[in-house]
Amino acid sequence: MTMDTEATASLSRLTLLSNFGPPPPPSAKVDKANGHTISQSASIHSAMSIETNEDDDDQQRDTARQSNGSDTTRRNGNCNDRKRGSACEIYEEDQEDGVYSRRRNIPSLSAEESRKAVVHIEARLIPRSMMRFGVIQNLISTYIHENFDRLEVGAELEGWREVQTLANSVDRLCVTESSSPDAFPEVAKCRIVVHVYQPSARNIIDEFAATTGGMFNPATFDEDDDETTVMAATVRELPSRDMDGLWDSLIYPDDVKPKLLNYIYTTLLFSDANVDFNIVTWNRVVLLHGPPGTGKTSLCRALAQKLAIRLSNRYSHGRLVEINSHSLFSKWFSESGKLVQKLFARVTEMVEDESGFVVVLIDEVESLTAARAGAMSGTEPSDALRVVNALLTQLDKLKHRKNVLVMSTSNIAQAIGKSHSAFIDRADIKQYIGLPPPQAVYWILSGCLTELMRAGIIAHLDLLEWKDLQVVKTKPSQKPERERIRQACLKIAAISEACQGMSGRSLRRLPVLAHARHIGINTTDEMHQSPVEDWIEAMQKVVGEEGEQMNRLDEAVGTGKI
Image (cartoon, rainbow, N blue to C red):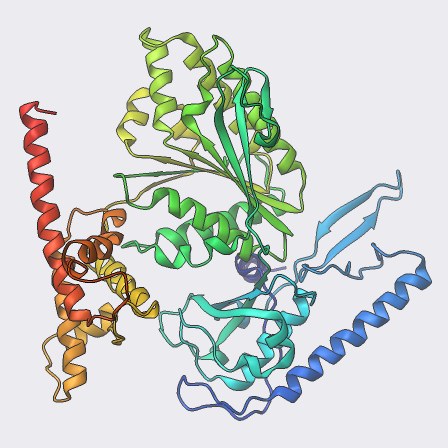
C-alpha cells in the first residue's frame, strides 16, 4: 500500500467516525424544488417501499435466527441485528480458548465521499415509537434526497409528516449543523448523516447523598436521622427532553462547541485504534473557565445531551453525573476521601456498562484545588488534601475507559493555577468561556423576544438575523413593514452594544424585568399582546437601570459599606 493510499484510508476512517452515520443512499431521478425550498409533492411511494423492504429483511433475519438456534449473535461477518445499531459489530471466535472478542467494523469511505461537507440531521422519536432506528434513518435520508436541493442549517424540515411512518414515529426533525460554510448547503454535494434518538417520556433524575455511612438513594432517607446529609451528586438519564434546544441556545464567539465535539470523536477514534496510552496520552478531562453566568455549566449539560444524540448508534443511552464539589468535604475527620471513593465507585459501575456513555460534571472545581493548597500550606486540615488526592486518583482510573468524559468548570481559573497544577495537567482542553460579544447578545435578546411572540405575549414580527441586519443596516426599505423590522432590529443591536459586560444569565432575565418594571405596571392578570417596539424600549431602560445599580454596588464595596 502506498503512502497516499494509506493516508486516504486513514482520512476515510476518521471522517466516518467523526460523524457516526451511514453514507447517503444512491441518488434517484426525482422532482425537486427550486432553490432551497421544499417541494410539497413528496415522493412518498419510494420512502414507503424502503420501509417495506426493511420489514422484509427483518422477517428474513428472524427466520434465520430461528433456524440457527440463536437470537443474539450471528457470525461469518454478518451484522448483529440491534435496534440502535447502524454500525455493524462482528463477533469472532478465538480458536484457542473459545472466547468471543467484539470489534467494531468501520467501513471505509471513498476519497470523494470523505471530502464532502457533512450535514447533521437530528430526528427525535416519540416515546411510544417502536420503529427501528435504521428504518427511520433510511426513510429520512431518502426523503431529503428526493425532495430537497438545499437545506437550511438550523431550521426544521417541512413536509415529512406526509410520510405516514415518519408521522407516526417522529416528533421533531431538524437540520442542526453542517461543516459547509454555506448557510444553505447543496444536498448533492453533502453527506447527510441522520441521528435518531428517543428521549424518555419522563425525566429520570436520581440523587445520591454523601454521609459517613456512604452513598444511598434519598428515597430511603430517614428525616429523623441526626446525621447531616448533603447531596453529593445527581444522575440524569440522557437524552432528556428537557435539555432539547439547550445546545442551540448557547452562543459563543469562536468554535468552542465544534472543538469539544471533535475532541470526543478523536478520543473514540484513538481508543478504537488501540493507540498505546504510554506513547500517546489523553485523560478525557475538559476544563471550562471564565466569569460567572457565561453558561459553562449549561454548556457541559448541553454537550452531554448532544453526545447522547450523536452517539446513539454506538451507545444505547447516556448518563450525566453532576457532582457537588462542596459536598465532598465531610465534617468527620478522614471521611472526605472515603466519600470520594464511594461516589466514584458508583460512577465506575455506570461506566462498566459499555452500552452507555457517561459524562461526569464537576462544578466549581476551584473549591477543591483551593482546599488542597490550603492543606499544603497548613491553613486547612489535611483531610482537604486527602479528598483532592482521592479525586485525582479516580480521574486517573477513568481515563482508560472509552465511554466516559469528565467535564469541570471554574469561575476563578487563577485559583486553580496558583493552588496546584495537578488538575490542570490532567485537562486535555482548557477552554475560556467569556462574556458574550454583541453578536451573541443580539442573538440572545432576539431569541427571547421570539419566544415571547410564540407564547402570544408579544405581537408577531419577523426579526432579522445578525448577518442579515448587517446587509440592510444602511439601506432603508420603501416597504413600511420591512422598514419597521429593520428599525426594530437596529434598536436591538444598539441594546446589544450597551450590554457589554453582562452575562448570559443577566441578559435572559431582561424581558422579565422589562415587563415587571415598565410594561405590566398598569395591566391586570389578563394577557394582552404588546408590540415588540414597547418591549425593546422597556429592555433598553432596564439595561440603564441595571448599570446604575451595579455602579452603586461597586461603590459600596469600594468604601467597605458591604
